[in-house]
Length: 266
Image (cartoon, rainbow, N blue to C red; front, top):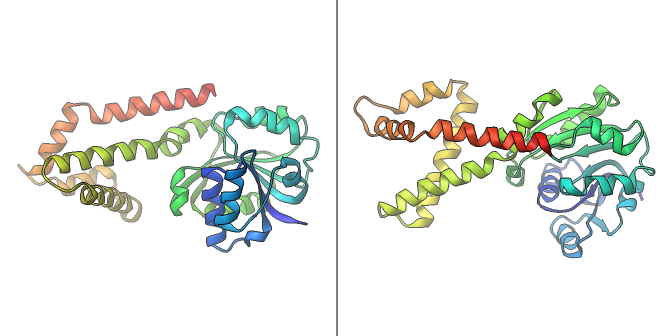
């Protein structure tokens, strides 16, 4: 049995990636194998995506060309210790753990392995992920392209130098949480002004989606787009004034700084 892609860990992030790959028809479900220690998680992956499943990490390593390590960072070391002797130099390992550097990974494998260190985010679940990829020196140009095509199946990808990885964790890995807080807060305010909650979430979320799209598609500076909404003596500039007074930007910057600092120490 020969698989193109293997997952060690079948949780949320793995599911998002599987979903994207199958939806884009990059691979067939039967070309994907997933292992997870937790039986219900494995079963869910099989029922949802039709992939092969196993309770053995070794089976994944023996059968897949590309292996995605989709376990939590604290389990990386034990999983690598378990599989390292079986990993062949033709296989590509994709990691998705913050803080686990290429140097650390190489040391744990104890030999030359093809590794792409990545940081995806949960919007991958709706095909709008943002992933940073950082290949090690054992990857050829062609292999890097192939790895990126897998990552592109659920969103956008940028190949970056490894020193930027901690910044990526805060600006895209963790940032959906801040955006959800922002949407929730905007909806709370709309509810306070009399709007039913389901409708408030829709208005707030679509406004965020549309604004993000304007930044990506117009190529205009965010400040210029903000100025376009702020009419003289109008409602918007008044809201902006209060956000500035209460330290909105500073609050975001400090939060992201704290996030990147934790990532550095992982």
